[in-house]
Image (tube, rainbow, N blue to C red; front, side, top):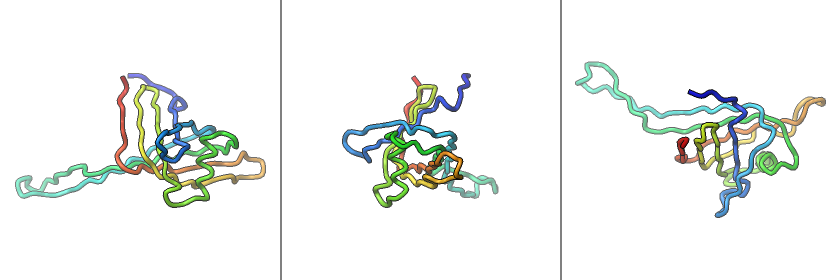
Length: 143
């Protein structure tokens, strides 16, 4: 088993908004992230289980929350920040996550910018976004 520092995970966003030729760029200045996985579980209790419940995972989704600082001039950071003022399909993109193990997750997503440009007068401007999966991701295990 190998351990790794969290900063070795790389988040890449397609700054072309799902064009035929994607351009994946890192999102600079992100400080923290969480991945929340939501599973849909169907439950039923057939007679033959004598009251014991059966379950089956029937669906999944996930949300990645990234929190960091606004970095004007960085293509990935600029792309995400500009979505704060957009809606509809303009907030749809594709993301890649490169894990330290060599595994990769690529998925279509909807970006919900929750914090942009603000903070105390002595702070660096914040940038926070919820990256919500949109359909089935492509997971490539580590080689």
